[in-house]
Image 1 (tube, helix red, strand yellow):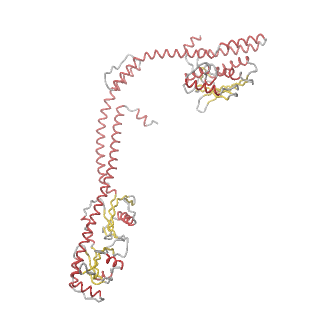
Image 2: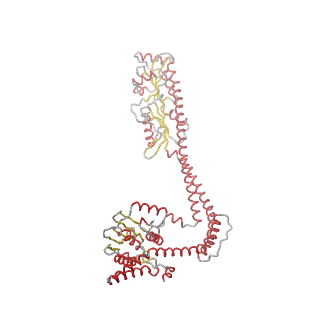
Image 3: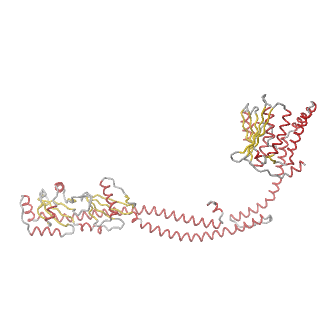
Amino acid sequence: MRTPGRVFSDLKIRQKILLFGIVSMVLLCSVFVLFYGVVASHTVLDRAEEDMGDELDQIAVFLDDVDLAISCRLRHLGTSITIQQTMDIAAQGGRQARSWSADALLKDICLTDQIQSVALYTMDGRFVIGSDSEANEIQRPSRAVLEAVCRSEGNYWHDDASYDTARTDQLAVYHLIRTREDAPPIGIVRAQVSRSALTDLYGYMGRSGRSDVYLFTAKGNLVLPIEADVSVLRPARSAFEADAAGQARRTYTDRGEQYLVRTQTLERYGLVLVDIAPYSRIMQEVQMMQGTILALAIACVLVYMLFFSAMGESLSRPILALSARMREVGGGRLDLRCNSDSGDEIGELSRSFDRMLDQLQDLMAENEASEQKRHELELISLQTQITPHFLYNSLDSVSALVQMGEDEAAFQMSQALSRFYRGVLSDGRCVIRVSEELQMIESYLKVQSQRYRDGFDYTVDVDPALLDASIVKLTLQPLVENAIYHGIRAVRRRGLLTITGRVEAGGDMVLSVRDNGKGIDTAAEEAAREAVASGRRGKGDLILHRKGYGMYNADQRIKLYFGAGYGLRVSSAPGEWTQVDVHLPVCPYKEYQQNDLSSDRR
């Protein structure tokens, strides 16, 4: 399955530019719309909260006007002779017949917009006279209300409803009746506030239309509005209850809808104002503006599509021309040149391509020289593995066996020596099969075992699945030679040389040469590691300690053919054993053409 990155990389330059322009414009518009939404939301919310505060202040001013109007009407009752006589008789326990002048005065007071009904009471709360005698007789003020009225200096507002957390129309204003301002009170007047007068506050405050104002009494009874939206009333009452508990919040959530709330307590009137607005109503303006911006953004995207399409065409045309010229050069026409005189990056690319063609033939010549040098180094590497003294010593051993009359042993040693050198030559091939390498090592070990009789034993155990894999020729021989000369011969005990081969979990091949010789000295090992890490090599600087150049050359040839991730790994226990692991890929054998070496060998 193709990844998004792969799909993008396969697009033409014109398509990439067009895609980039569209994506960048869409992202830019999206960020702008989101940024505007966030900023505008905060701005609208702050403005809505300020408007709600102004509305509540206007309502407070409106209630002050209502309170002043009611106070002016009720203050004149004490100046009426009829009212004074009526209240004196009532205070003495008597009861005077209703007079038309008192009734007319009370009805005149009720004609105002703020007052619905009026009732007079004695200082101890007994009903005297009222505009609606039957209703006011039932609505007798409590002792707590009488005491509060006596303590007040002006009007005392009170919710006379006997219930709470419901709707009330029993909002009343109490006022002391005095014959003059400095005289003692002769009674109490109760004026029930007209609901229609309170309803006028909605027109007075000039509402913005985003919020709803709810008027609660201290008991929690709803005064206004007359017809309340139940979905908004619930959070409004929650805001009232939280304010009463001293836990007022800025926002409330009810049934998934969020509300902005502003409360104000009017202690003078025993009322609580709750101004509440649903977020959805507040954000309508922002949403409309976001829609307008989105429409403009779509128009801008269309314009940018045309612009980037033209830009992509102007950039892709010279690139396509350069690509066509490169295909012609790839077909073998190395004499072609772009000869571009453009000053932009594509022109510079064309001129660089021309310079590359100019250098190509020189590089090809240098490459041929490098290949020749590599083969020469390989030949030198092979020669250093087979030191002349091995041949001389082997022939001396054959001669000694003949002189001692051991003709069969001499014959076997000569045969093994012949097979070994036949394998070394290998028709000039540098890469052979593992099976061929093992046959050569078997011959080499037979020769060495004849030379050092009873000196060591050896075993070869290689996975048959690896026998047809490829290996650089003479990889194991220097390892076996080092194991015999620098490992086994350095100890008095009988030596044991083990050659094994296996496939690792990762799929690579590991051939191991292990001996039970003297091992590697720790100090020498560290010195060898430092020499290898610093790039210094001299006689005795091998891959981790062993003398001679054989192991180093074998490691370098493995890296040359199979990559830097492969080569030799050495591990050892001083005085006990040494093991050299050859890490190689499992590659089926392939005939490597070594024409230069083959000709030399012939």
